[in-house]
Length: 120
Image (cartoon, rainbow, N blue to C red):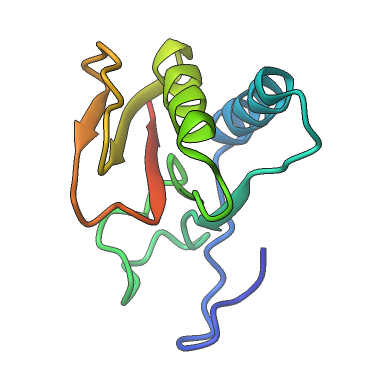
């Protein structure tokens, strides 16, 4: 990840636990989709924990945004299922649930172009 083009802030910091969980999610997604597709990480936290102009909740190194660009509906559904099955994932905000029965997945219309994942 790199600094954003508008504010030149680095949003790539995650706690060690969150980074390990992200690695698990990526490995599970790659295995489930039988492809070399990689996850596109959009935003995490700034290392100093400061609020950023783009996010009011990305401050603790436990929240990440993962883009869904290029994902099919089936891949989105698989990724949501992987997140809901991971014990470290506390909540996922996304605009669809795909009939997945999980209290972790919360419908959020503004999250149509990315998954907002909270590690807990």
